[in-house]
Amino acid sequence: MESGESKNRYPHSPIEQKEPEPETTFYVLYYDASGFREEEIELKNLNIPKDEKGVTWINIPAPLNPSLLETIGEKFQLHPLLLEDLLFGQRPKLDDYGDYIFLLSHLLEFNPDSNEVDDHQIGIVMGSHYVLSFSDKYGHLFKPIREKIKKGSKRIRSQGADYLTYSLVDHLLNHSFLVLESIEDRFDMLEKKLIEKPDPHLLVEIEWSKRQTATLRRSIVPMREAIHRLRLLDSDLITPDTRVFLNDIYDHVIQSIEMIESFRESSSGMLEVHLLNLNQRMNDIMKVLTLVATIFVPLTFFATVFGMNFEYMPELKLRWAYPAFWGLIVLVSGGMITYFYKKGWLSS
Image 1 (cartoon, rainbow, N blue to C red):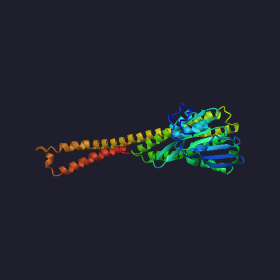
Image 2: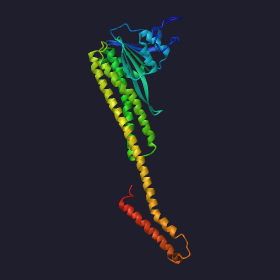
Image 3: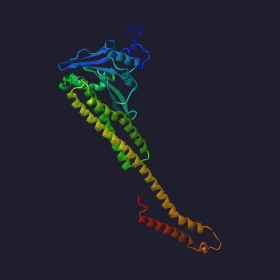
Image 4: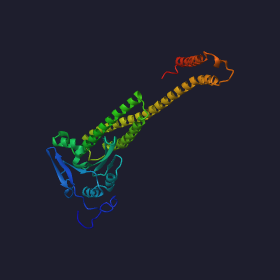
């Protein structure tokens, strides 16, 4: 970047004033059917690949800052709206800019510290013979894809940038699918708790399940439209062979969405079961209190009558009056309890 006043090619860019060009390096991988080469290149030496015989994969590390994005936008002639989406975040989407295709996807990861599903934004720009991925530093997220290229995987090494893009998206979906399976196991455990051992404190876990479902829906459901547009996109950048694989990841997205919808139904169902359990618990308590009160009503009556201590009450002067009183109490209360038991009112 030249010192002094520079021309801004993107008048609508979210960055009004340029900061000094950041000092950073980028992981770059070149490959074709005959071999591969990987390098770390400084930002000032980063340029649009000229070799159209192979594929160049450039990973741009996150987090992204405005100065870095604007510089990359100028070097690769990226649209300012694309840079804005990368900077401020968007739901998964696909944009066709003619010379290149921009896919904004999301990566799901379970954070054991917060006990929540984290949603990370991943951007992919696919040109005729190059791919830009905006992810973690040095592309550790896509390490399995890099290993396939290095080991000479015939399929990926013989295909173009469109197949590499498919591989990256497929890896993201597979990674997210593992998170979905983990969440599904926790949902199953929660449902088992609700049935076997209802507990008022389970409401916290039910609310947790609803939050996770909302996060999953925001990240995965929009991918259906994005992948659908990608596989039907009328573009020379996508070959017929790659479209077959795009159909496959579309099926994966549909499967993931079906799992999320089942989570949504399970969350609602668990909340209803929890409320029913609470109502049943309250009904059981009220039943016990009602039965106890009913049993003590006649006992209270007898105690009130014989506790008046009138002078001419003959029972007070009888030797057997006190034992007879307790015998009456036991007889009445025992008779009521037996009656309630035969009616099934004492059963849980």
